[in-house]
Length: 109
Length: 114
Image 1 (cartoon, rainbow over the protein chains, first blue to last red):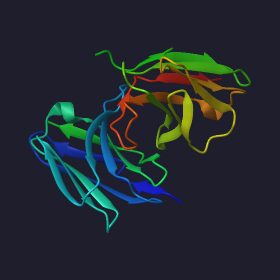
Image 2: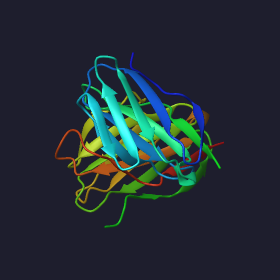
Image 3: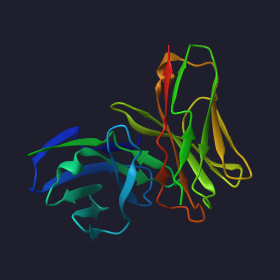
């Protein structure tokens, strides 16, 4: 079966750095997405990785290792507004997005 | 550019009834995908429409169906509602020309089945 695993909840302090991990087992791979979803709102796109390595976009970076079936999202200089759920999704060989259950990130002052 | 809109935002139905949800994509986007989101389960892919044709389908029973109109607006129908159908239903649009594209989500329709 297809499976995406990510921690259910994480807590971090304002101004700090946090890494959210995602491991996957899917039938085929056509890229990995990270989305942010604030409570009661729609998910919004953060990043897309299809090749191994690190993609940096401002305070957010995303890393992919295809051989390990592993990705992480790195958030630097955390702000209170970063409190949200972070969703990892893999596009499989049928071009369907398989989603993890999401990681709820709580930022404390 | 206006975002993805979904109507209605909230819906309460009883078991056995049927429901139709509507999604208007971003202007110019031809692909619309539908997802079911429940707590602890993540998003589950229902189906994707592109140029009025179902291009991809998830593993949901036939009670779940959809269609897309020539203006790219899409509707999703659920017949013979069950308690387990209570969820947030999200639609997402993308240009659709490429198989891998960023998806833009609407605010969702929260369906409660009593």
